[in-house]
Image 1 (cartoon, rainbow, N blue to C red):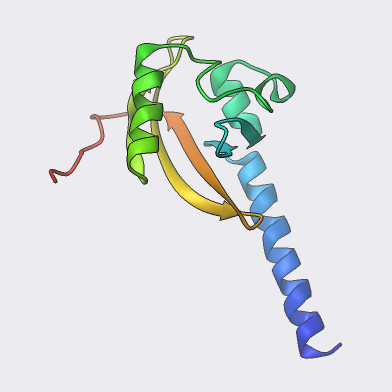
Image 2 (cartoon, rainbow, N blue to C red; image 1 turned 180 degrees about the horizontal axis):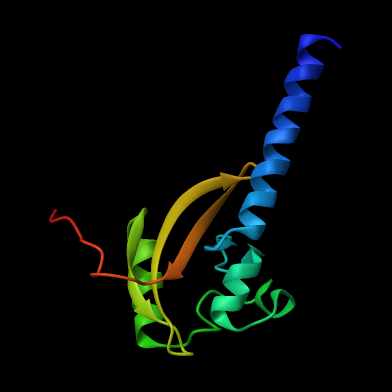
Length: 127
């Protein structure tokens, strides 16, 4: 096996391993496109939101959590990436979240992570 074949195999292994780890992580992973539609979500994100993957994929960010806190979080993410904060979900679960810009599959996307909040609210550094 030549070096370029080994490198491609290694990259494919890394991508598969990372994808599998994200799918089974105890943190919600959501990827949305420039139209603000979910293009990928993991199992934990579905569990936190109480919505199936089928319902989330293609839906607009914020549709599953139509709260003022969610609207403010989305606006913060769109205004300045990375962005982070704490907000209640529509089902009452309090989550911490972070969003970052990414070039997933060579296209611009936003990756959002959320997890059940514990402890004090995240510190927002002063500008």
